Length: 412
Ligand code: AMP
Image (cartoon, rainbow, N blue to C red; front, side):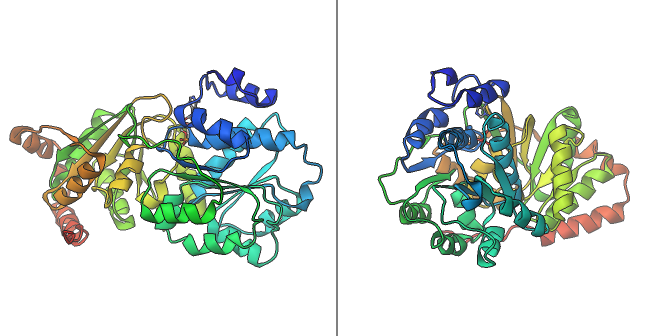
């Protein structure tokens, strides 16, 4: 089925064509009709599957048809997202797909002055995209009327739970009308998520997509056995071999992110970091440069990079193995977006083998191994530009590596 055959406003179809989306993706195919009918939806959708447009398209149509007369009487659709980056991204999708409609949208998140947001809200907003913290702040100060919300969307609900937003979400529910449409999106599902979903959604809900293989087909992912202290040589090698490509590197902590950046700097590689210790405007600038391709290597922590959609990331590198198998799925999902091919490579040290085991159990199959012979391994270390550096620096780095090694997990 093509988008042209859907019963949605022509202006939205034109915007879809402009984005060069030809056919709906699986999640769009399954979600758009029930959302248009006003049903509640629980969608378990992989990242990168087109899930944002899966709710944006029908919501725009429904609001456009309603011919909203008075936007000042309150927000009609509230979208909650866990991070600033994701909230901004969703807003951009509303703006680009809604360019030919009368529906307007606003994104509010913390870390910036609230006054301009309050002014915009006073002018009237149809679709509000918000992170829970700031949203709750504004509601408690009485700047935001949510009594007219007809559609509530929770995006990356699993991530919101991880970030401890559950209480905020529950508190907010008291400000929303009971009769509303609720759309619940999550990349992963477990008992906690199910409980949250069932507590929010009253009608029958549909589980739209539950892929057997949570990693999208167009991503080839593999793991290489590399010891902690050697990882930087292999990252250097991979980046230098793929100098033209966009590479997203995942590390476990903010401190590690800065340290990997420094290690790359020493061997002449330009990179930048994204994590919660950086100022919001710095984060936005870094993301802009990475999006635009001026920055080729971005080093990120899990929290900062969940759900963000960046065009043309050819490689995801798990410099540190993710601490949960769900994060593995999220991380590798940053490449191979839409219809592009992507590659993901994990560096796994001896200490991280049990993390790899968990990931493979969750995927239900082994992750393919990259064979590195002893000779190749040694060669990669020998040719590193770090060998020309100051040995004291290297010693200091090795010591710090030791300090930030993952804690041994207790076997269940
Ligand atoms: P999302 O899962 O919402 O983060 O979307 C992942 C990527 O898929 C984004 O870059 C979208 O622009 C792209 N996308 C969404 N829908 C389609 C479609 N129907 N055809 C091609 N690409 C799409």
